[in-house]
Amino acid sequence: MIFEKIHTVPTSEELINKSFRRASRAMSGKTIDGRDSRISANESMLLTAANILSDNLANIVRRFPTFENLPRFYYEITDILVGVDQLRMSLGSVEWASQKIHGLARSYVGKIRVADNPDTVRKEAFGRLASIIKSINKDLLFLNKARNILRKLPEVQDEPTLVVAGYPNVGKSSFVSKVTGATPEVASYPFTTKGVSIGHFTREGVRYQVMDTPGLLDRPMSERNDIERQAITAISYLDAVVMFIMDPSESCGYEIKDQRHLLEEIKENFDLPVLVVSNKADRPEFQKLEEVEMNISAITGEGIEEVVERLVGMIEEKRLQSLEESEEESDEEFIL
Image 1 (cartoon, rainbow, N blue to C red):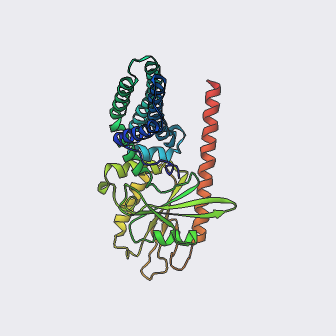
Image 2 (cartoon, rainbow, N blue to C red; image 1 turned 90 degrees about the vertical axis):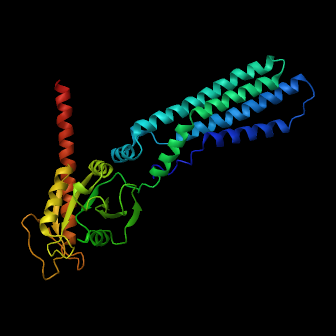
Image 3 (cartoon, helix red, strand yellow; image 1 turned 90 degrees about the horizontal axis):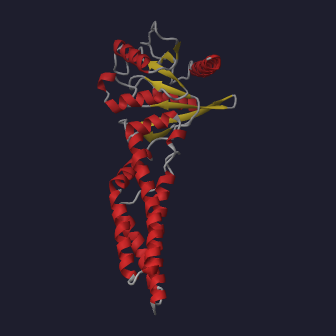
């Protein structure tokens, strides 16, 4: 997963203690019997401490992904949860500190070599190093907090996606299980009350992912907070179509009028194709609804294969439309 390589980000105190301990060990192994050996020992201490600090800071920056190359979905989710601009600023501060420490150490090595008292110069350098690290402590704390949040994100592949929406108990999880042929992987989103179910199936060599987001796409917009609303926008950036499941039997506990209202909200907030499907066709109280395009039973499997084929076709239509629009934009740019 994109954020798995991000290690725990240490605090400024942890970095300082680690580097100075290693520097002390570098000093302890040396015999000091004159000016040259004292200069060498102090130089070794300084470079050891500075290299540890500089390398650790550089590794922090390197392990975070390059945000320009993030899939749009993850970019939007990252911006929602922690803020991309703040991440960039904090990573920039850490990178600045790494380079500053590297240059400072080289400068103080020169001072140590000509100093009457190398120990005093090295201690002064240590103070400067510690000051630089302490100045970015708030950035280190923020990056570690961001790391802990982002590592919890489920793995959403950059591949064709079926997003399943509808009120609780209408049969979304049963549908996902039927389509994927196994119990879907469940991972927690920081902005949902329950785990996100993600399963996969293959058609003609193409892998599709099926996503159910309980706690996000199963209640009216008025009941969602700002983060959840932004998350809905982020999902819109997936190469996806939406399947909205209705329960005409109302055995889910929600009246048809409420389900219709949620359907309209989904259509308004998703710039994605929507297929409306009725589930529980096996129940005696099942009734046909005018807005429903296809009927299924997630219990018996009735209509499941036909719905999947329709959804796959909708994804391909969406791709062709996007390709045509891109070509038209390219032609317009060429004419201009």
